[in-house]
Picture (cartoon, rainbow, N blue to C red):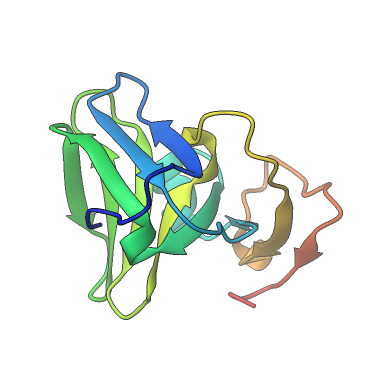
Length: 137
């Protein structure tokens, strides 16, 4: 999450209350829906996210941004004021994942794949046409 050298944002996004606002620069990865138990607990349902190269994320406001170490190698970014789940950050990745629902419309994105479908909640069905992987695919 650095200052971007690009002058025009490709996408903008924020938490519900606006205490965290950001811009992305450069291409976004297609949306991946993760159905693992950890994603479901932290988001309240499955976690649908895109990703951008680290240098392509510029924070506009971050006074509410807090990080939770969700494993030994990853952390989750959320707003301390409104509770919005915003980011998933794996320490060895060149990208940072961004909750697809935090981006301002229009995004032009679609769900490309579902991962950890064997762990999905028993209260819903996966009914989209995207690929489905029992593990992380």
